[in-house]
Image (cartoon, rainbow, N blue to C red; front, side, top):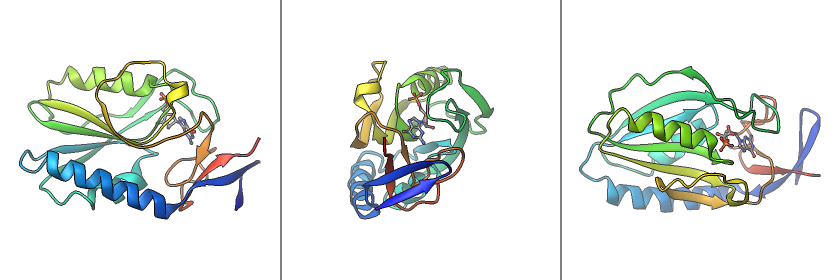
Length: 179
Ligand code: 5GP
């Protein structure tokens, strides 16, 4: 099935059912790992909002949920590499187990920046849970990346929270650009 988002055409890549199944698997792992530690799920907005909502419902342990906002794509197809921090962290993560929730890791620039920034705040641990990961685009070694939903090809994707020109975030499934 194809959809048009603004001026571009996309085709279905990952169905909501597959996302739901994988999210439940990740949730089961996190539930076991973070049973007694009151972890902080820290989401990176805007893209993570749908995944975060579905993920935390699969992790029935006491936890806190917070968000930060960063952007490097500014609505287009390519990362600008310049990271803009629009909403700072409001919660004290010193001594806490932090699970950084990302929609997608592409070059890893955003994640590298974020992990370094969070490490300076002295959490007990930082682990990254990313729904999508493009291994061929990755430019960094990030050992904190422990929980991955799907490894995908180096193609631009939309849906399930991810946008093109701020549109397409409400698509239930994930779609890739038709070239
Ligand atoms: P990175 O810093 O890893 O290159 O890029 C991270 C950010 O770029 C993600 O959080 C996401 O906002 C955006 N991004 C990377 N790849 C894609 C993609 O295929 N589609 C969309 N919509 N955003 C992407």
